[in-house]
Image (cartoon, rainbow, N blue to C red; front, side, top):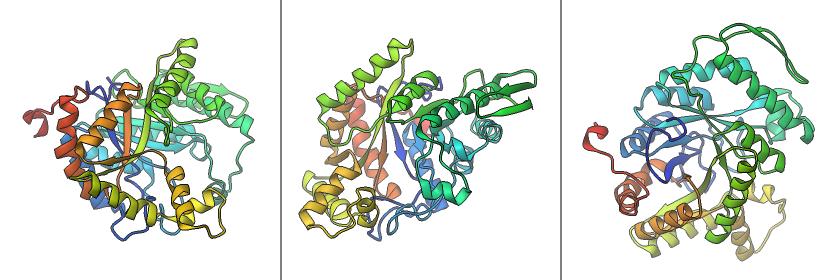
Length: 361
């Protein structure tokens, strides 16, 4: 049931990065990620039958405004699990920065708070300045996933071992390890990973239930080929993993309104200080080139009226995508319209099941 996120929706939907101030735009109406707004949007998503909340793990801001205010994901998840009923809430953990014993215990605590609804997004680590804040050096690339393997092996064993155990690995040497209480139920939390390298994909295949992949601006046919390639790789190893992706969603009553707002908010008023640094384009660039670079950097966008958004989601599902993590310019302001207009269309397409009146109470 955990892998299904406790629903039979053919296409799972969730919110992405609600724990962090918006990275999409520098406009004043961007998502500020205050705690009251996080609670409100989590309860709104929960009541509408959305499947999950997926945070980003950041320890410092980036660019002009992006992620300047960011809640730590384990405590954020625990708080939201206490205030919701059905939705799965993920914690995102950089494994080199969090001891596996501490992570295992904190996740069990969150799991009990949420009656079995916590999930774990495993990140090996990528942001050098953040590691410097901790006084931690990144391991060489060839050691990162081997360390992450030991880390998750220890976490899983803590969750299941009835007796204290020792662990002797290349990176971790632990004595008399134990952890109680255990998780809620027999299943482990849903584990996801988004490693892009061959080592990252193999790590996901070996350890996780779902794999997040970026689909950028590629065609739906190219998305399908990408999904088939990954699932073929997984099945060759005897595993069957779901494939998720993410994207920016701008949904408005008309196609023109959606496209105009996307251009205004996301392209014309992008956080160029952040995106330019990512692309190593610090020198001034022409407006047209800048917008093209922003479009390439922000990933996949779902822009349109409710019919168009539903059509694009259906194409993603046909391509083999099991779930989408959606980012909005302002989650709380935009989700009511999305819930009222897009979700019923997805139900009519057979991609979502209706939420009954009893479930909404």
